[in-house]
Length: 238
Length: 238
Image (cartoon, rainbow over all chains, first blue to last red; front, side):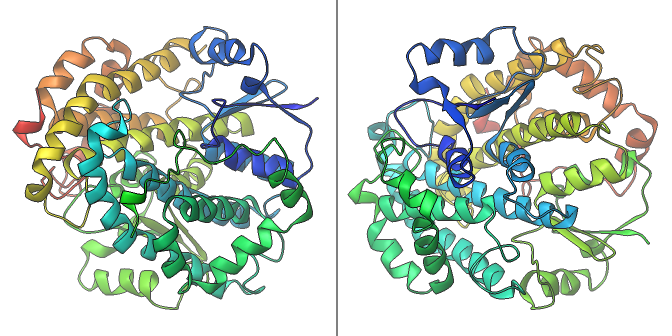
């Protein structure tokens, strides 16, 4: 039975981290809310009383009787199921720890354009967004990139992967985080990635994996836009 | 061998979610950085080249050869080890999903007083903090509390616990989140908790568990202050 992914249509958002895992594994899945009437099905699980264990928000994944929300928890589940994480418990925990750190970075990237409230328009918090983005570019992105460089450098199996000698969902998620930051902050990232060569190489290498390359070239990959987590507002970049 | 918890001394912070799990289980642990020279040991693991799998930031936990960072990942590990999560995989995943949602709430609570940058003083972002806090009180806390109420209401074992019929780390973490919000936003929380009776009852009930009550009354429980995640600035409450 196909996996069912539920996420807002029209943007990559956090759903993209799940899509990349499903695509890399060649898994059979349905992107439910992008289908006709798919939003009805999504809202029934979110707001209806159909689920004993209702997710707080999209994305969430249905796999037969299993319903799981929270991006990192979905990937913890899929990592085991799709062989996108090490088999040993410590390796799984380390992969998950990296994922949670990527999630922190992604949340900060979102708050760059919405530092006051998600419910307000960008234009209503543009001044604050400029202040927050300056700190994000100057302090936060470099700190995260330096940590990812260290993780890659200390991997006993080499710098190609974050964990072990094979692809994990953490590699895919780091690809997406870097890709999104490149879209949102092209000037800053060109500068910052030059000091994080292993991260830059990982981004390139993941983009060229056969299934990921095919996905990125397909219509299943939605373009970046100013609805998602990563938004390109030139005034926030430098 | 005792667990070693590493977290900034002088504040509860994210370390407190780990402490509550260790305390409830009656586990033998050392709060390393609160000891003499403990900061040296913490910085060696954070910044030195001693660890193949270095944590990004405190808190992190050392259990023999295992080193794990990220609060939710630490609790995933401890949940299994200390019997603070269900034994079945789906139950563990659901507990973790709730924990990740609590973590999102906690991150938003932090950003109420630091909406622009953690590296700046509160006084330098006070205007923005007021705007963000108003949205947090009016929209965000109610949305989270409503979800926790739903989770408690739909637990087939009753509303005493978030998951199953026994205490889990998710219950302990929800206690801490509510407790911190009560400290930071006493006016708003008095109003909001009156509409979330099951959450309010869980908070009270956890506080009265014998080991938690003993912990809260001990010197091991550090008082709230304006260094932590939850800060009481009267101008942010209403």
